[in-house]
Length: 384
Ligand code: 3PG
Ligand code: MG
Image (cartoon, rainbow, N blue to C red; front, side, top):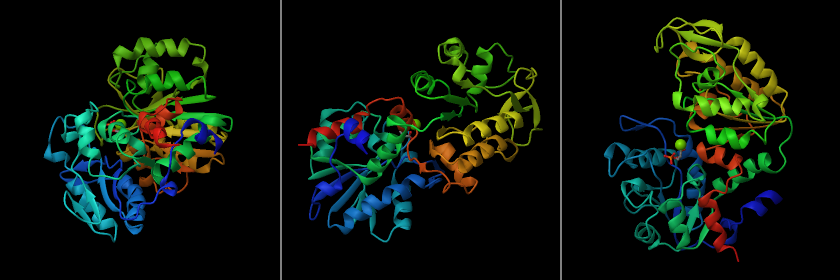
């Protein structure tokens, strides 16, 4: 992996002796919590092997993570249910905020100094530990106390999950097989406009579906009825479409619409330039899905982030379903990031079919843009 060694220089668990040491692991345990219960536990299951390995190697293990975006302490975002689920998934003893084989700390974002990367907060976090293991791939694009500050203060290495993710993404960064296709969906274009702008020159095609496609259709001058549009972004998107790489952007040609934003609304397919005034776009249409499918299957590398429609609703799942199947059928290198796309794959029983299923959302996208992620960059100082 020459690219990884070039861009990211860090030590790993292979380079250190952990026996008898107090080790703090930063995992990304930011999972959906519904009524105090863990929903999708993919990130917890992904974090566990590193923690178990450290326990079996004789370390005293503590793990910290953020959960959600609380403003101060908010018990609905406690890591207690996460610790409980972790305990259900492993044979080692897991304790929430108390001594155990694995000690799970409370939500790092309950402390104000976390997101501001406050020195005192970082100091406090680092204080009792001999070693810091950064394993939270999904969070290393944040320069917070638990991702950067702590790693400036105690010897730090990259954990196996982080290392594995960086190596997988390196395929896209150093020498992506071509055609290289990125498929983007999800609702919010404001989160992804910068990514699209930076990624377009690097890719061969960018397929746009999901809620964000309506801002693109609007920018093309189409009426989109009652579909979700981020008005303040329309001008910037028009600039992208008219820009030097605008022809790489592939938009839907048809849309599955409903009369209201409701699971049971009637599903009708209309042309993407003919969405009726009273209709709401809820999925890409069948012609779009077929076209996207061909482009995906004929690609040598594909990255997918964000569902094509409201995939939680059976009637509006087809677009996402077809994209997932196209990735499964693609012979090239395929990676999927973002909680919703990963959840869609699992819902369809296709999570084993892609080359790399990432635990990251925004972190993966920022990496693909060519950005240096602060939580990775900080590890370099421990390399002799
Ligand atoms: C994620 O879910 O994308 C990561 O855990 C980061 O969360 P954040 O966007 O709230 O920083
Ligand atoms: Mg996020």
